[in-house]
Amino acid sequence: MDFAVRRHHLIEEAKAELDVNYEEVKRAELQIVECEARHKEKSKQLNGSGTAEQMRELMAEKVARQGRYGINGLYNMQRAAIERFAQISAVFTVVHSVDSTPVAADLIRQILFRADDIRSRRVEVDKAIQKFTFNLRAYSIEESTLETDRKVRDIWADIETLLSEIGRSDKWLNLPSEC
Image 1 (cartoon, rainbow, N blue to C red):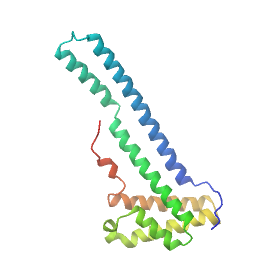
Image 2 (cartoon, helix red, strand yellow):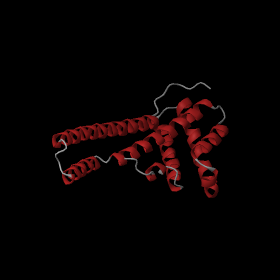
Image 3 (cartoon, helix red, strand yellow):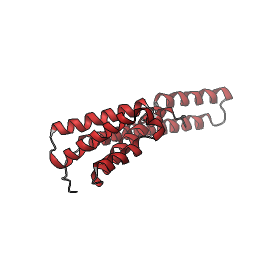
Image 4 (cartoon, rainbow, N blue to C red):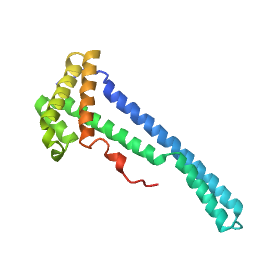
């Protein structure tokens, strides 16, 4: 199969979203490191002469400052962006590396959905994946127009909606916080 090199806005947008989330996490982590350094400096200034109450207040101040950065929420947003980019990359890889549209659609369904998740929506899921595969192939091989790009993105949005409705797209949002 000979695919022309064409820009795929869907994957570019997912990558941009991932980049933005990465930068936000990096910024917050740097602020937390700075907060830790200030806390350490203040602790040194007390130099053991501080009371237990002063140390508790200092620790509470540090925790409150770090909480304002929302690092756990940023980590969750970054995980969701990673998951989205990985899903889009995987389906693009399948469509561009498998010659058979039905085989590509079957592989995509296996990547994105678990059999238990889609029993009652199998027809709807299969239809959306087949349309996505067909339109991405059309965009990549036949005509990379704004119209075919829109179709690819609209159908991907339908797939994301299906993933969300069965609870697969927001799995990262329910993780316990580590910090």
